[in-house]
Length: 150
Image (cartoon, rainbow, N blue to C red):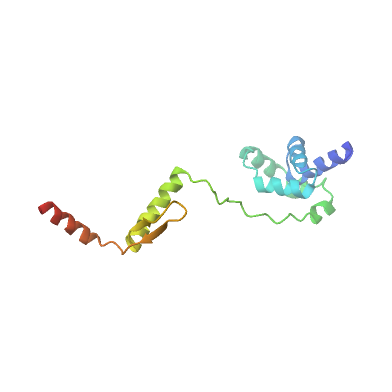
């Protein structure tokens, strides 16, 4: 892509998004000079890093229609942003201490309902987990007191 085409795209991106040319060039370079991908990246990321006082001053001094004077209507009207993908939340395969703790809490709750779990049989791969009858906490306490009395 020639330098003039790149500068045209930078100017177009800057006029659509109202950012400086360096930031526009950054987004376009990161999107391999694809305008749709660069705009989607810009709007996905948001503009939280710009100070609010500058934006308020600019918006009150000139109307919204005036800021788009230099942009050809074809480029504004023909722009259809790509469908924004949902935020990706990976299903982590790594067990952290907090996730282990949360899993233990969930297991303790289910153990009271299901009963004790026992491991019966051979090695790690040939053994079997057996679930016993549900615990009855009152029986455990009475058994403990009876054992203490003896």
